[in-house]
Length: 389
Image (cartoon, rainbow, N blue to C red; front, side, top):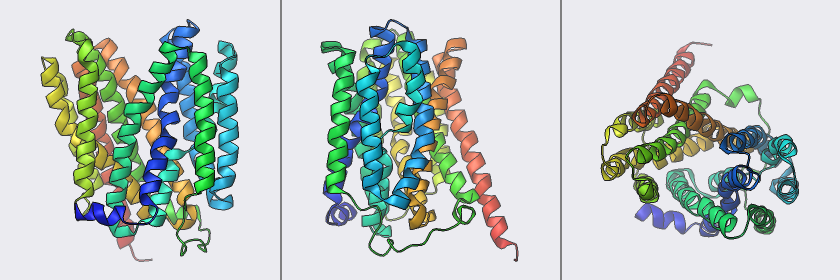
C-alpha cells in the first residue's frame, strides 16, 4: 500500500479523483436514459433504441479526438464551454423530439459529450510522476467501475419513479453542474514543464506501437461489452435472471480488486499478455451450469479487466508527447467506445443464433485475436527500429 500512500499524498490527486468520479456519472447514465426513453416512453422497441444509441456512440467516437485537439490548442476551459452548452442543450431538447428527429440529433449529442474520462487521464499524466502513474491509473479505473455501478442504476431509478423526460432534464442539470465544477477547478492537463512543449508531427507519435496499444484497449472493452450481454443471456437460460444484479456486482468487484492489486505492483505487466489472459479466461465461462458457478467463473477474468484498461492509459501517457496528449487520450476514448460498440452486438448476434456459451467464447476469442494483432504490431515496431537509417 506504500505506492497508494505516495500517490494520494500528491497535491490535488484526491480532489481530482473525486471530481472525475462525479463528472463521469452523466456519461454512464446516458445510454440507459436513451434506451428507456425510446423503448418504453416512446414505445419504439429496443431495436429502435439501439439505433439511437449506435448513432450516439459513433458521435462519441468521432468527437473524443476532436475535443482533445481543442484542449491541446486552446485549453480545457474553452472545450468545457463548448461541450457543456452543447450536450446540455441536447438533453433539454431531446425530450420533446419525435423519433426521426431524435435519430437525427443523436450523433451530435454524442459528438459534444463532455470527455470526463479523457480529462481524468490527462490530468493524472500531468500531476502524477511516471513512476506512480500505474497506481494513479489503477485508482482511476476502479473509480470508473464505481461510476458504472452508480450511473445506470440512478438513471433507472429516476426514469421509473418519475419519467424518462424527467431523467433527461436531470441529465441536463447534472451536465451543467459537472461542467461548472470542472471549469472552476480547471485541473491541469499538462505539468509546468510540459506547457512549453511544441507541436509535433502526427507520424512521429502515432506509431504502430501506439496503434497496438489502442487496439488492445478496444479489445478489452470488446470483451467487457460482449461479456455483459452473454451474462444476461446465460442467466435467462438458467432461469436465474433475478440474480443477475448479484452476478454483475461480483464481476465489477473482481475488476476493482484486480485494479487495486495491479496499482500496488512495482512493475507494469505487458499489455498484450494481460489482454491474452483476459481473452483466454473469458472463453470457458459459458460452460457454467449454475448461476453461482457462472458468478465464480467470472472472477478470474474480472481480475484482469481493470489492469488491462489501466495499462492502456499508462502506455498512451508514456508514448504520446505532452503537446498532443489531448488527441492521444481522445483516440483512446474512441478506441474504448468502438470496442464497446462492436462487442455487444457481435456477441448478441452469436447468442441469438447459437447460445450464451458461444457468446462468451466469441468474446474471449475476439480478445485473443486482438492480442495477437497488437503483438504483431509491436514486433513490427521493433524490427523497424533495428533497421539502419
